[in-house]
Length: 115
Image (cartoon, rainbow, N blue to C red):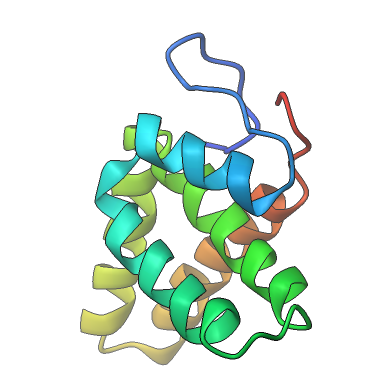
């Protein structure tokens, strides 16, 4: 069975509050490899533009990225799905792999703080 972002595992840190500051702190503590891209995206999309309009889209993207990255097994599984889809020679197989990855990302998007 595929790993799920909503499975309860004490080794997986809970989701932070749904604010950029709390999400960044969680990334620093639990998925520091995401930090350079998170900070660069924040600078380019928010800080340099002096526009808070993109914050909801920014949070949606990084909420999902963190939700997956905080669980090493799930992160590896999603990465494997992407690699297998890219290498698939059968269109139905590639589509099924991409749909599975998409379903995982949709479940991750629906996670609430503390989950």
